[in-house]
Image (cartoon, rainbow, N blue to C red; front, side):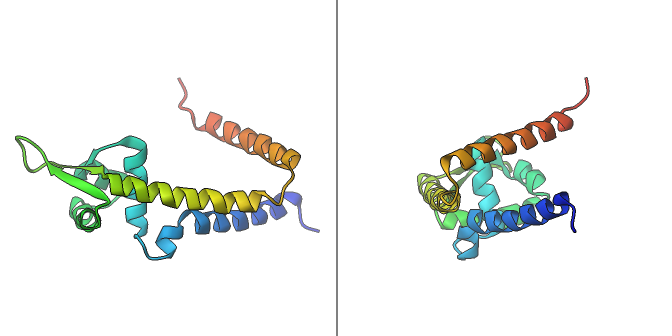
Length: 147
């Protein structure tokens, strides 16, 4: 018989695939690319960013970021502003339309995940919450740099 850890690893992998499917639904529906999704997510969390900073974050070239963000600008998801006085620096920020669409996608995601969790009782949801927090806190504690 298989060790419970092996079973849990398989179960978590399956859950992760389901989570990604729900989380990236605007990508799956072809509304935006995965890179555009990451860019919007970054702008929501961290605010305006330069092309160079964003290329470092994505692990790609500034020219690739420029191509992606120009498409996003045409879709009114973000705004690109040239620096003053150095117009070589381009800073991007999310537009109201981009924020509105992001919020709509997140609401759909929340509804889908709530539907999944509805198969659990309130007590089971609380236990799951505690177990996830325990795993996360131990993982984050190991990631902290040593002083």
